[in-house]
Amino acid sequence: MVGPVLRAGAWPAVAGLTGVAVVVGGCGAAFPAAASVLFPICFALLAAAAAFTLDEPASLVVDVTPTGPVRRTTIRAVALLAPLAAGALVLLAAAMRGQALPWAAAGLALAGNVLLGFTAACVARTRTGEPGPAAGAAVVLVLMAPILVPQVAHWVRTFPAPGAGGPSPDRVWWTVLAVCVLAIAISAGGRGLPRWRARVAILRRPGALRLCRARPGIEG
Amino acid sequence: MTTTLAPARPAADADRATFAALAAREVRRFAVNPVFLFAVAMTVWVLSTDPGNVTEIDSVNWIPAVFLGGFGMMATFWLTRSMRASEPIVGVTPVTLPARTAALCTVAIVPFACGGLALLRFVQLIPVGDPAYGAFSPSARIAVLVGQIVIPSLGGPLLGVALGRWVRFPGAAFVLFLILFGWGNLVTALSISRPDSTPLVVLRLFAPFSFFTLRGNTAHLTTWRGSPWFFLGWQLALCAIAVLVALLRGAEGRARLRIIRALGVAGAVAVVMLVLAAAGGFTHAVTA
Image (cartoon, rainbow over all chains, first blue to last red; front, side, top):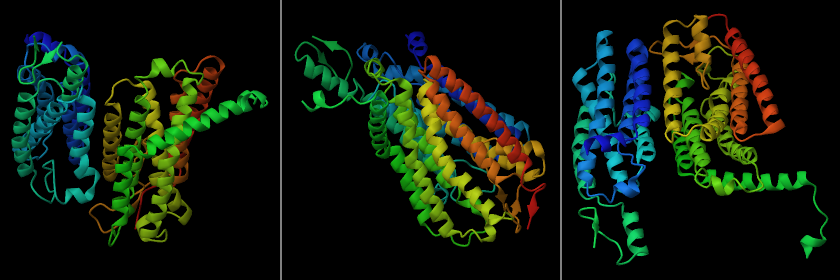
């Protein structure tokens, strides 16, 4: 079961975004002067890659199979290792180049970024079979907000750049991690069919097909 | 009855009317796009707040480029892709794909106009005579602002249409936005340490947006090398390339040949403009 579920993932999108992130992060590691902008961009791309891990082009079929959403989400979560490993590689390269980053905080930011992308996908997956594009774009815009809008940077920082003023990003990321775990548990646990699809199916074929939201499958 | 008795209009008139109707519809769709509305709201918010004691223009001038240009690119990308699912039906209508693409390209008028308004507001906030513009002449200062505020607002949405026509990956717009933003920051950061390096000047100008001044952490304002006027020419050539690349999709026969020929000309103009932009302006960075 694990193999087919993983094979069906949107690997070209995940790998492509992760690859672009590695290039951007590599430039950040190579040129420390631009690292404070390039590392957040790299992490945002990794978050977008994480948002594509739950894409399921065949969701019309997959959503009514006996394999539950919790199990499918758990299996697909393995794909998060790709963006996490890529981010760790970038941080390692920066460390080897002698950059003085707060490494624990940077690692926390990396995990928070990736988990935020995955959570956005989990929540959006209750609505659509391919949440990647919308969730990825939304996460990127949210994560880039402190860089794009100077006023936002006064309140929130998402990357622990050394010497930067403003609030510590650690508190933000611990809060985000806690909220993400909760959101994933709720969205995956409570997800049968996407709401719109269940409604359409029941409306069109009353009696012929009864869809169970608590545990997806076809009954009677 | 009216239709029967009316003289038949020439085909060109009919095409023009169809194009105008299509363009008006696309402009309406774009003007109510949530991403574009958000971009306009953010630009208005940032430009409506008093910047206080401004010592350099670079703290504010990139905001309209990012929102009207960058977010405009994402909006037109999604607008272009939104018709992809209905292509089998739309494709059998008498309107060709290049005509529909041209209609989509006209939506760039809206962010372009918004960019013009943003420029006026910017000049109101920081008058052209202000020393924050660096050592440029008054006309070159206007060229800097047009190149940093107005033209990116036009080029971004055009790039989004081209991207939507050619790239299937649905996240291409935000990835390209991040790459362009990262590239701009990278070459600017490199230019700080070596402002007189010619290759770095070319790299800094090899972007749809470029800074021409920098204060950094010092009390002095540095005006970098490069001609703002030729940089405008480079940006306009990029806009033309984006339109032509978008129109190339679905073009057939003589139209395709003409577009490819025009692309060659636009590419050559772009290269010449980039070289002139890098060679023009001050011969070395001026610190005052």
